[in-house]
Image 1 (cartoon, rainbow, N blue to C red):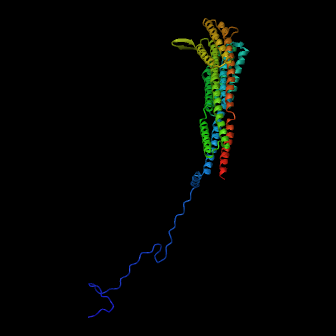
Image 2 (image 1 turned 60 degrees about the vertical axis):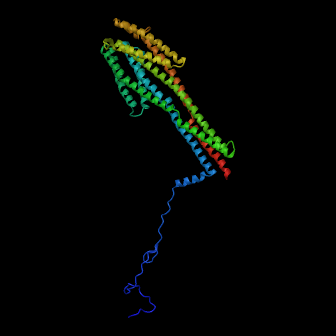
Image 3 (image 1 turned 30 degrees about the vertical axis):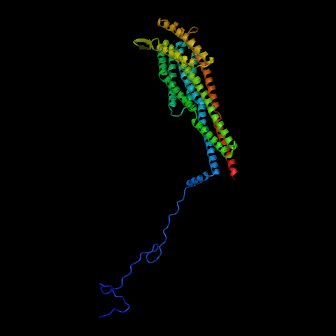
Length: 486
């Protein structure tokens, strides 16, 4: 029996013969070491994110805000920015209003008057043509001169209107249409005169055709031009009169900020005044006061120029046009001799005499409006004179119509175009009085509108200069305070 060698431990019971020695387990790789025993490179960290200039600026601002010098710099910068913004907005808004007020005075109202002048000149030429026709071969020099002057004034007015209208605008198209119709009308009138001198009745037909062209094509086009120019005038008033609320509000905010800054300065230093901030406050207060008072005065004057200038001129222009149309229809009543009739409520009337009555009603309404708008004796007196002449005109016209209806054509003609006691005297009286009233109201308009423009004069430039001084004062005042920390 074999014995185990000495010094060896016996195997545990239940086991067989011993096998080859067991392979020791492999240890886990050491972190940071590659297989094969080579150390691994350390992991690369992401590069630090670069901060934006804005973020860095915010951090600096936050850091500065916790120190008194930093706070003072921020306050100074904000005050200076507010002063500059106030001056810029004031200059911008008042520059727009000044330009609109200047347009009212020098562009849109003169163009509106020119458009009314075109209408009036055309109506005057038409009236003079019918008056000359009634005189037959003995056309007076006065009626011929009036016709020529009316045509010339209308042509010159169209040239002026064309030079001041926008190309391809509705106004420009209307002007082109009137330029086309004017030579046609002149040709018809000359034919009527030629046949009338020769004693041919066809002359009356040509004159009626010329009048129809004037009444149905030319005068409506001239009225449309007048309406468009009045709309442009109203738009300019609308741009000139509104309050500059943005500038006013910014001025109030600025004064409140300056007052707060000075109160803060007093509480921290026990000093009553800071000369720089006081100068900034004074400059800002002057701009705000100038803005409110200057624009208030300008607005008041512009309103007065519209109420007692433009509206009066419109009423007087309507009255003068109505008187011219009435005179033309009165003449054509005798030219047509009943050839043109119309029915109203089943009753037949002479078309021109019926139109004469409507024109006189329009004249009465326009004169009443002009008298209501007149604000002084110099404006009321010519309107009263025109009213008196209109009343007498109606009486003499009734007498002329009575003679014509009774077959006394020559007597009727004498009562219309004759000398003393004829309706032409009343028409001339109305026209002269209205011309005087128009001159007076035009001067009133120019005075009021000019005063309104002057009230805003130099305000944009003054606001800019004072704003610059105010901003400098605010910066100097804060700078003096900052110097105490150095």
